[in-house]
Image (cartoon, rainbow, N blue to C red; front, side, top):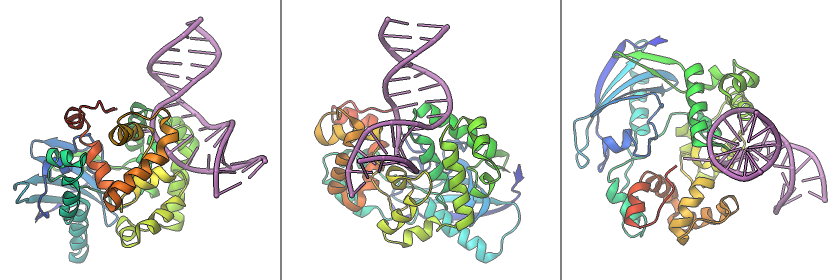
Length: 319
DNA sequence: GCGTCCAGGTCTACC
DNA sequence: GGTAGACCTGGACGC
């Protein structure tokens, strides 16, 4: 347990439209930084690593979607220097999607027969990300070749046993483990403790690669061309085409068996007979249709399945 | 109760 | 360069 007793208050002014509620607590249940964060009406308590430092966060909205304002309270173990604090604030704003102008995506979406519904339903929702690729990469590995129920069990166990606990503002929030923490453990131990099966060796090998060879941060990957970033991600153990599209901060169109059913119905009016065999075809169609906005299109669609099912009179598989 | 199949992919050996 | 088969685990299903 790490006590974070040093705190700093400041305001974040996101680029409008920005819905705080939809962005920090996404309709499909995707967490902001960790599955163990706590919500209370217009406030979220969460924790993550900023500039490599464990940080507790209390975030509230005092604005509106059209005129957004986030009141942030940052909790740290020891006082940082002014330069480091400034970098952490900037990184947090970026990770919250506060600096992202989504107006171009909205212009495309308004003309699209599927997306026009999603941007009405989820107006102002922004994409969010972590400072390093490790949490998303772990998530992607734990989603592979299993049911959602078991993925969630593996994820909870991994974070519960190996993630650091941040204590601040009367809350205790556990965060995704860092690669440095994971390299202390063997694949056999992880397989036994959290029943990760063959995924355990991917988790350990990935952590070892990141610690030993280093790897660009999310911000550094964003500075590369999208395909260059993806090529680097594909070199990592346990990361294939689908996982790379989840992890890539440029976004991708991460089609797996589950989403192939959904987008198959949306594109062609019916679920593919063989989901796995149709992945390539459906992925190509999504990329053709939405281009550089493919990730945002994917993101908005999967957050809005319930409403889309009703509006398009198409039963979409929620889980 | 037991055997088989398969689930929100990736890797490797083989051709 | 393309592709079949193996890979942990546990729930669903048929018998």
